[in-house]
View 1 (cartoon, protein in one colour):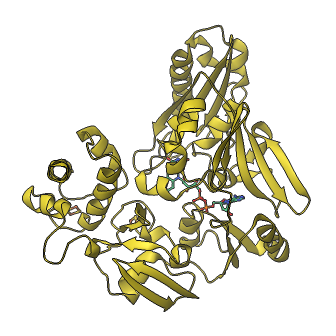
View 2: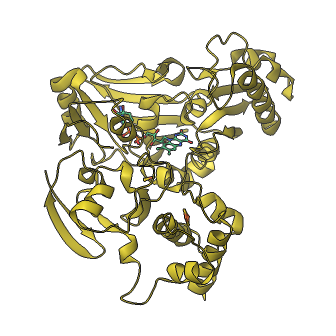
View 3: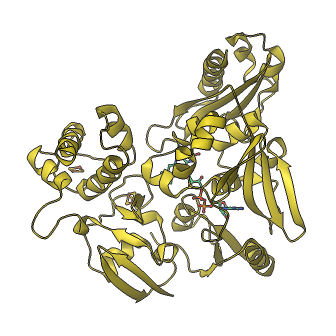
Length: 154
Length: 269
Ligand SMILES: Cc1cc2nc3c(=O)[nH]c(=O)nc-3n(C[C@H](O)[C@H](O)[C@H](O)COP(=O)(O)OP(=O)(O)OC[C@H]3O[C@@H](n4cnc5c(N)ncnc54)[C@H](O)[C@@H]3O)c2cc1C
Ligand code: FES
Ligand code: FES
């Protein structure tokens, strides 16, 4: 089936099998491998992207379901060489170790702060319910998001 | 993990979805958010030959006030319901339940229609529609009908929907005093036990999910209720299919049901 999407501001059109997930489409057709696939069963959040401005797990969406949508992936967060404030904050606050969960964490953090720019620590922790990290213990991830919020609100 | 092959169709109206269902019968499945069906298809527990996407049907994603009722369109996502001022004000119990479904990403995609049609025994909406005496509006080959919540759930993943019927909306009477309590499965956030309580005058209506294969109205609790939490002792009276799994065995689940019912009863007092 022919589908078209705007991904990180660029238009793409491909003929795909309906059973291909958005995550697979991004990684395999477009080489956007920043969207990670961890569990592939909607549990871990590593595959989180934004669909029409809202965070979603790309492993659990068929590409055909989001035909016509605007997608933002981790590759679309930086502005040229300038990191997004959330990315910068993860770097500054040691918000990652192996980095596998990080793209999903950053995309979810962006959804949290978009809807709640002054999110409290507790709200941030609740907001990350769908994102698993096996390394950091979450503490520095939460701290990174708090710092990003401060910068973005400044 | 990739689902088995299927044909993908998009319905542009309710009647088109119904005629597609009529044409393909058992081989077809509707999909809205896909957040129950797609995982099942990837695990190949579900292998529909035709997938009918209803998500873009106009008019199924609105929330309206009709007299003393709030009507939520079947395609409304959990996020949309959670953010609705009408819902927050007039059926706050629905807000309490949806804001605790899964996580942000799940709430951004999952829908009320999909949740009810899927009838996962650990999902949250069933307890709430039961306690609120909501009505599930459906349309099929034989026209429209409205199903009382108490007649809707027939068993694990089983509802009163006919093969060619689609849920179009859910109709909630306004609720002045209602509460939803949930004990979470720690990873997925589904309910191990979820209890919805609605108080009207001296009476209380209690819906329970997560405990039995079929969500139920705790009528024994309702009958014994005398204005405090003591009636919670009857939370599982007459329930003979209490679930037992790695989250909670039967004995613990029954205990938890009583604890959660007590909390809910005390909260609506
Ligand atoms: C990780 C994870 C965590 C979750 N946590 C929770 C939780 O805590 N609590 C909870 O309640 N749920 C939870 N869910 C389930 C989630 O809310 C689902 O999205 C929802 O239950 C199904 O909605 P959907 O639109 O995605 O349905 P779909 O997956 O699109 O469809 C589900 C079923 O309903 C049918 N269907 C869909 N729409 C209609 C309609 N209008 N009429 C008739 N049939 C229809 C489909 O044919 C299919 O059989 C979770 C899901 C995941 C993946
Ligand atoms: S890979 Fe999508 S949620 Fe884990
Ligand atoms: S940094 Fe390794 S999984 Fe999160």
